[in-house]
Image 1 (cartoon, rainbow, N blue to C red):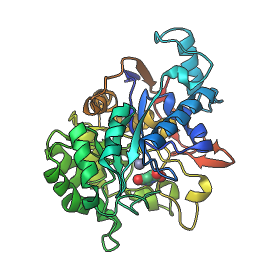
Image 2: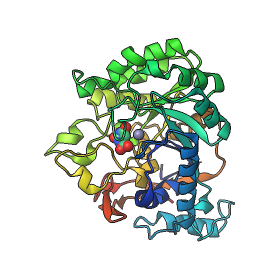
Image 3: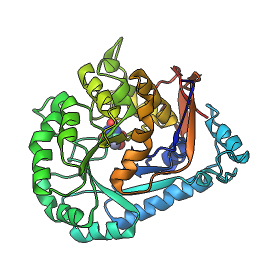
Image 4: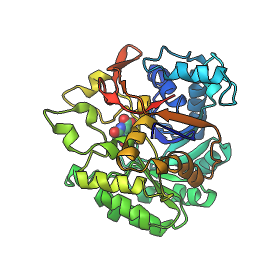
Amino acid sequence: MNSITIIRPDDWHLHLRDGAALQAVLPDTARQFARAIIMPNLRPPVTTTALAIAYRQRILEALKINPVRPDPFGHAQDRLVEGQSGSTGSPRTEAGFESYGFEPLMTLYLTDNTSADEIKKAKFSGMIHGVKLYPAGATTNSDMGVSDLGKCTAALEAMQAVGLPLLVHAEVTDSDVDIFDREKVFIDRHMVPLLQRYPSLKIIFEHITTKEAADFVASAPSNVAATITAHHLLMNRNDMFTGGIHPHHYCLPILKREEHRLALVKAATSGNAKFFLGTDSAPHAKNTKEAACGCAGMYTAHAAIELYAEAFEAADALDKLEAFASFYGADFYGLPRNTEQITLQKTSWTVPNELAMGNESLVLLRAGQQIHWKLI
Ligand code: DOR
Ligand code: ZN
């Protein structure tokens, strides 16, 4: 197959950060995706409706003021040409990415103190689509996360009552649990009791990385779903260590063994509507990744849909990409499916090494290497 046309996808798990980083990374997502679920782990975290609405406003401002940046891949220019020729049927201008109609879907950061009132406020704002559970200390900017789920009863009951989904970073933080087992252990210790206690709460098991998580979600009731990243579909833990240590392949949950990657590919390409696209693209400045104690997170937004296409093609399942990328997430969140289309072509291109991010730089996944699909 030399090209594939699908309904414009959405990214159901994305880190956009703030300030200069937001300015730098937003265009990559906005040129591919119609909507994205925006993670709230800023410093300070987005713990209230007021903070989420203010953050959303900063994202919309960044869309407006962000000129179509000189795009080393040519994507943006392609899209402008496409738009100007009217081939997609929707107006496109040179004003900026707001013309692409990108919509940030906001989330709240759950803490031990989140009140039922705050949850109701979030739901009725119409702009907040989920509440993110970070176990305290599990990952980047999670220190204000939840120390004990027992302290979140009022918030979780309110979420169940108003229909606001819980987005879970599902890893235990106990230092005696091996880092490669943290997701698996979380299922028994926390996910199972959570489902029993809140049987109609919508739960999204974020960025699943193990066969156990894929099996758990597949056999759970219909109010439980999962996102899967492109990097967990394409890489296993050898990619962190082969020939030396690769800090840009370090993320959380950490890459696992090949048998787990294969289980994720099977889930993503199964046609099961419980599994959908969430990149977890997580920008960190180069100097904070290439450090004695490097940050967790991979930046994949520059080639997100192309990387997924590569993973689906390798599994001989390109025909399953559209529903995974563009239908199942919207259906689960109760949002309308997009109607516009995008086209990917089988064309090889070389990923630039870095992207400027304010005064710093960002190293892109696959830097200096080729990707064989290209969004046109
Ligand atoms: O690798 C990760 N990076 N995992 C997360 O859970 C957070 C993310 C980030 O914000 O950098
Ligand atoms: Zn994340």
